[in-house]
Length: 188
Image 1 (cartoon, helix red, strand yellow):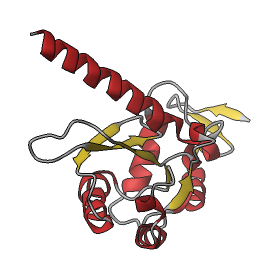
Image 2: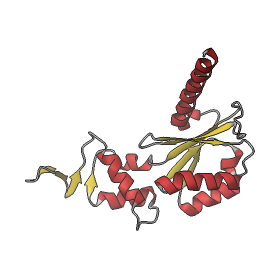
Image 3: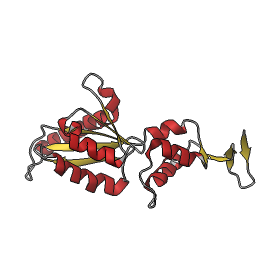
Image 4: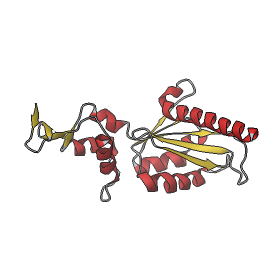
């Protein structure tokens, strides 16, 4: 099944076997997703395209979770620019995080511009997004835009927030860090 080639590469049924050590799998998926000449591929197409050249155990599952989780951290002290909310986005594959300060009263068109300028412009269109059932994420405009981009929307619920566990954990960590900064600042 697995063949050793003279150049040291391992092959599995005529495909390069990608080892689990390091970030090679993530790099392969990132490159496939960000290809300049590729339209957003979607999970199934990405799997079939990569499957022609590469193989690793759990490859289809890894590609399926290639997306982001997002949530809002609200009711923060208002900044001088009026921001009292942080839009938290976690890349579920690379674990990179974006914190976007915003005002609670931002309308969906402003959120879409923020999302396109800060996330899509840097990382490309996501295969999937997990978010809570906030009205901004359930709006027809947001859903239509994501459908046009080819992004699958999955909603977590109040009863099952673990579906969005990464952003929930990130928010808790951010709260702890902000609390520590405030305590440290007040102590100075």
